[in-house]
Image 1 (cartoon, rainbow, N blue to C red):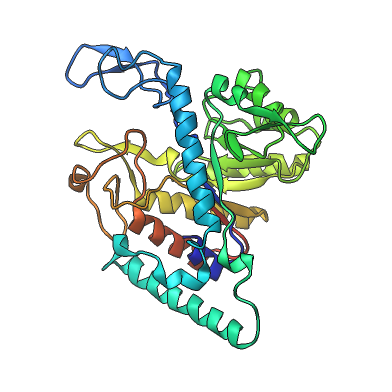
Image 2 (image 1 turned 60 degrees about the horizontal axis):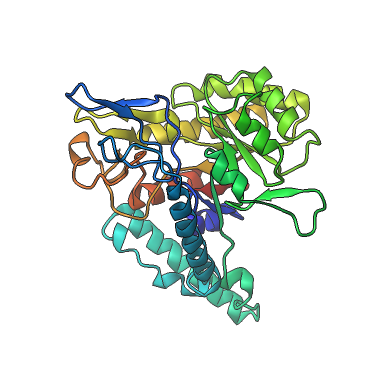
Amino acid sequence: MSIVLMYSIGPVVKIGRMAGQFAKPRSSAVERAKNAALSLPSYRGDMINGEEFVESARVPDPERMWTAFTQSTATMNLLRTQASGGALDLNRVQDINLKFVEGTAAGSRFGEYVRNVSGALRFMNSCGVPVDSPAVTTAEFYVSHEALLLPYEESLCRPGARDSGKVYATSGHFLWLGDRTRQVDGAHVEFLRGIANPIGIKCGPTLDPAELLQLLAILNPNNTPGRITLITRMGAGKIATGLPPLIRAVEEAGAVVTWVCDPMHGNTESSPSGYKTRSFENVLEEVRGFFEVHKREGTIAGGLHLELTGQNVTECVGGLQALSHEDLADRYESTCDPRLNASQALELAFLVAETVGGRCFIQG
């Protein structure tokens, strides 16, 4: 996806929602079994309790935080190896395994991009421009998750080695404040106020512009550029009316922020078969609405926040694969939220690349 966007648009900052994303926000404290009277505490992510619908699995276990930490550490080590060990060398772009989109329209189009990138690198080499520099042979990749489980986040805070008086959360590079935990007098806001990491704020349809300005005053009192990313999650039918008041309030206050669109969480629905799913068409509609609103307001649409996987799952309906609600049962693997599969994610990257100018980043 980043290759498609870099080639078509410009620089891309890549942030993965991984290596720490083991806690799950829930709207309800209890969960009821289908066709049964039994109710149990909600599954809140593997860092807290188990998904299995039995009483013993739903008991919170602090040892799970240690398991999550060790797995996150292993994931980070793997990412570092991939990013710096040549696996992401653009000179080897033709070696990328595209088996997951073989035979699809997205796969064919990506093959064309690969040929164009390879041709551009050969031309640069012929002109004497080095193509073995770190900018070409390595990649920067960051990790991110919601700052939800405060005992875990607080235990991984460390003082900065160079910045006197600053404290950094080392559980991830970029942490965000969830739509359910953004109370101005809440513990999560207080925690994020005290760390020096760049942070995000999820902005749902219930967020009042005045409340948003309060959050910005608390979390970024010095209006430091790069500190705050506002991640809108409105829903396809609400983005056109819900986003402009927030943009205007931020602009009038002179706050420096990066605007990012989360077209996933506002478009979750239940299929007739009971699966939680999302429509690719609704995701695309919210993305397009996001860019259209920013164009009208004269502000910059800074990027996307997506839930996706490189696997060939069947969790979101629609797209060029034309997945239907009947297809969901084939390969539905998520224990949390439905994700775009590899073909749908790549298709979305092409559609964004075709319609957007300027700079953009992908958060997955």
